Length: 267
Image (cartoon, rainbow, N blue to C red; front, side, top):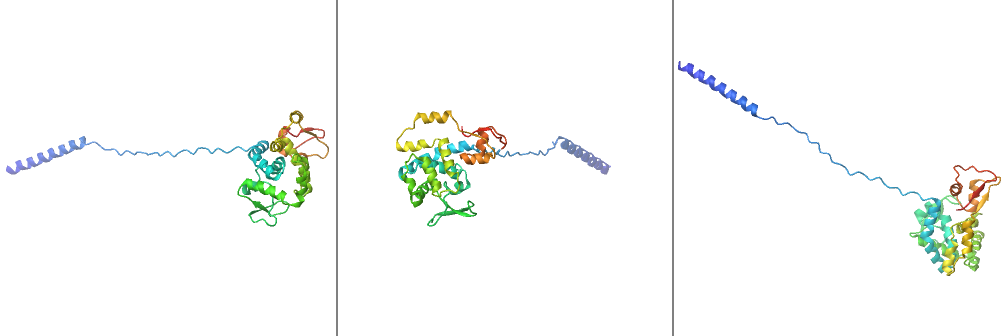
């Protein structure tokens, strides 16, 4: 009998413990794993603003504004017309945009020649792989250009001309062999007259330009009537301007021109 009561007590105790554990389990809250996604925002790259390419005319005006004072200073020291120096710089350096000018600060296409001990770079010109001078400052290129003309006998007669005679200087440079291009004088003169570079000569000399000349240049732009055999390229070389300028001035979308067509050469 005693044993029976003991067994009943054991069974009752186990049932009580089991129920208690179940209740405890039901009360116990389930923990859910929460995935937290961390988003790291990378700073957005700002679109690089490319410097717009200047038109040929604007690039030339920018070049003149940048180097006119240098050219006038060279005129004060060496008596070379500032208009000639600027026109040569514009033509030889493509308004400061040629590879030789950008990489070597050589604005006048001066080759190494004998006695040059400075930096050198090789570039195709009249011949392949010709040696050109390298400068660490554009002003040194301008000074070397002045000394190049002043120190060589073949240019001596140029210094006997009046400082205002840019036409004589342009022709004299060609006659002395500065450039092989037969249209070189015409190109220099065209640049001087188009961009009114002669005023810097007068500024150095302390003279004023007559208003009459200004009025004539503004009211009567130069033109060319197309004849048989003309092309935009041949016309551009004749007047010292570029094909792109001719197309821009005359609203041409192609290189086709007709005999008798009147082309504007300047604006």
